Image (tube, rainbow, N blue to C red; front, side, top):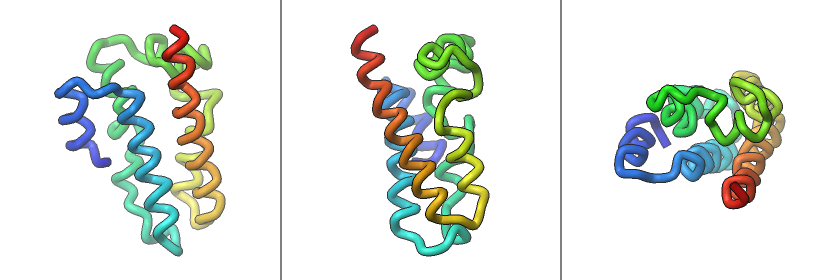
Length: 119
């Protein structure tokens, strides 16, 4: 999912966590389809510019301390999550590392569904 679609879907009221999960599912699906990292579409990741959770929190001036990830980890900038390894792996030439790291990020985000439902 690219930024324009994410922004539209946020505007019509879709859940930012679910949109972030979809973003990482799209990344994992892309990595499963390609054979070399040079084929990866970097616009799928694009950091906080393509993160519905970041977009929602920054728009509402809540920032990381009110993001479900920040609440769960008690840290800013997705520290304490698989995100930084996933982000770094997407800039490498090691497709297997990227597949593993991005699946970890996807599974982490999915695990937050339970945290959210308990809140």
